[in-house]
Image 1 (cartoon, helix red, strand yellow):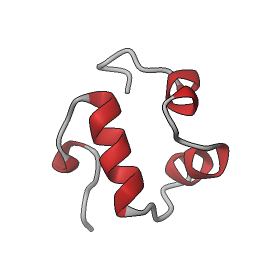
Image 2 (cartoon, one colour; image 1 turned 45 degrees about the vertical axis):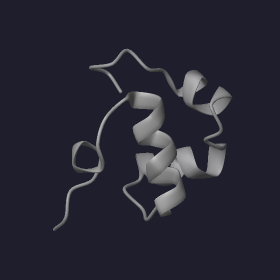
Image 3 (cartoon, one colour; image 1 turned 135 degrees about the horizontal axis):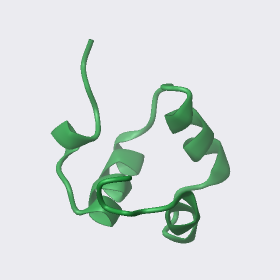
Image 4 (cartoon, helix red, strand yellow; image 1 turned 60 degrees about the vertical axis):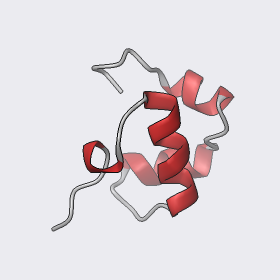
Length: 53
């Protein structure tokens, strides 16, 4: 988000809700639908958003 200058406010206005935003901050699970939204908003691919451990 920082690299693309995307704020939390922009995510909220683009369909990412507060609960999901909180999950992202805490490193919790997100749905594939949320991942798709994030990729669309940030103009990136899933491998740029998630990391498998």
